[in-house]
Amino acid sequence: MTTSFVEKEFGPDAREEWLDSMDAEAQHAFRFPLATSWYPLDLYWTGGMAACQRFTPGRLGETMRKWGAHAANTQLTGIYRLLLKFGSPNLMLSAASRMWGTFNSEGSMSAPINEKEHAVLKLENFPLRDPLFGQLLAGWVEEAFRLSGKKTVTATVTQAPIADRDFFELSLSWS
Image (tube, rainbow, N blue to C red; front, side, top):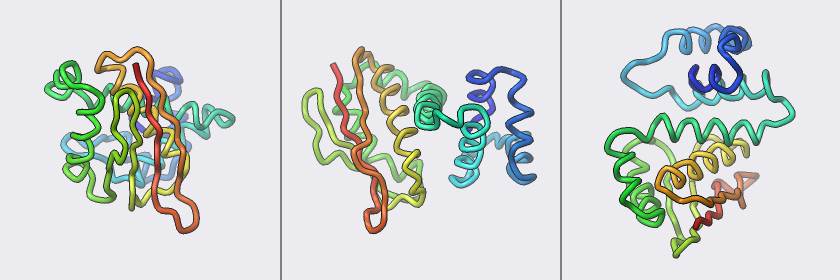
């Protein structure tokens, strides 16, 4: 959860309330953000859950999607934004599957179904098993597809990790 999302979504005064809702280590990390690397997954998730529980306790899934969309807008800059404009969602999913390991040290991503205007995205062996992470991922993918010029985009979480199932699965459609 980035400070910019908290301030954009909940207002500039929300930052301190959000920070105060976390433990000292998380507060320090978000008060003095890392300039050259990503937050560890557990810290990133702690910040996001703190904001969602603090400001939208009855709408966690909706807020997770907004957080995912904000993350896509923040992370897809420069050359990636340019590639979105010229590539199709199918090409984007193929590239995302191949590039997952470049940006993530755990888990693997695939698109076992990747057809015209429909795909299935699968994230396996990812250490974060909270079903709400599927909503964040759905918001990220929807926004990435919108940035590529698609007007109608739907990402539905069809599977989330439970018991012996260790994957997220999203059904995607666009036009």
